[in-house]
Amino acid sequence: MVSSPAHLAHDGLVEVMGGRAVPCFERPERITAIEAALADTSSYRLLPPSAHGLAPITAVHESALVELLEQVWADSVASGATDGAAPLIPDTFLVGPMAAGGYRGSGTAAPARLGAYCLDTATPIVAGTYAAARAAVDVALTAADLVLDGEELGYALCRPPGHHAAREMYGGYCFFNNAAIVAESLVLKGARRVAILDVDYHHGNGTQQIFWERGDVLYISLHADPARAFPYFSGHADEVGAGAGKGFNHNIPLAARTDIQAYAAALERACAIVDDFAPDAPLIVSLGFDTFERDPIADLALTTEDYARVGSIIAGLGRPTVLIQEGGYAIDAIGANAVSLLSGFGR
Ligand code: Q9C
Ligand code: ZN
Image: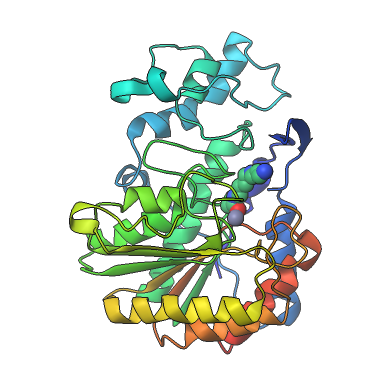
């Protein structure tokens, strides 16, 4: 289990949802609650991350995105675009005809820079955001190192999460795509087939986009049907990849209130696809607990006990596994949900 206190400084305060500014759902207590629950069981070792540098990040993300995230807060404070208390949330988005031909605008003002790279109004940037996002990547890569060094299971307590971040886009509470960065790092270490299984409530549009034309990285996701759920514009069953990646992207959309019976059947289908693909590197799991029955922004119906079953189905693949924390916003239950999932791995 790997985690870093650097995430504490990414505390966005507010997001804009449904036309209202509301307290961020993606908050520091999510990870401290998991840490506390794991510490209570006293059967897990909690390790700090080791620094892996920028190269694994720029292998997956455009440097323009990395530079934006690194600089925009300080630039905005210097220019007066923020008073230093208000988080940065874009108010103008580069979409449709204005974005034609890869146009990013030449604007240097913070709204122009944010709106050219950001998906939504729920992903505020504050002073500590970049350091937290960098640390989350290190947490993920360090958990993968543990598994490469022989552990059967590594759990990366990543925050901020990653699976909505695409090659040159952030959003959906995500800045760097922790799972995709781990997958690409495994390829760069010589793996020929890497599988990412995404069990977050939301479709991982970023991970899908990054590996869309790749036959060496399988992406398979179970998530709420985008007909009703964020990110709305991706996650449909007919999105199967393109070029060399055709057939290596699988989306399994789920109905509202899906319970463990239907969920387990879908997960077993997904695991069969992973098994057929026969990865030659550790399995990467994008792990969200927003499938929980009481999650405040979601509508599936898994219980705390059900996560043991989810864990045991994934463990049934019999593969070394790196769990990468994504979403999950019921803070009073997230620790118990994590402990339950790990129990399914026999831990
Ligand atoms: N009306 C993750 O779970 N807002 N991100 C949805 C719905 C964004 C979730 C608004 C949700 C992002 C990692
Ligand atoms: Zn989610």
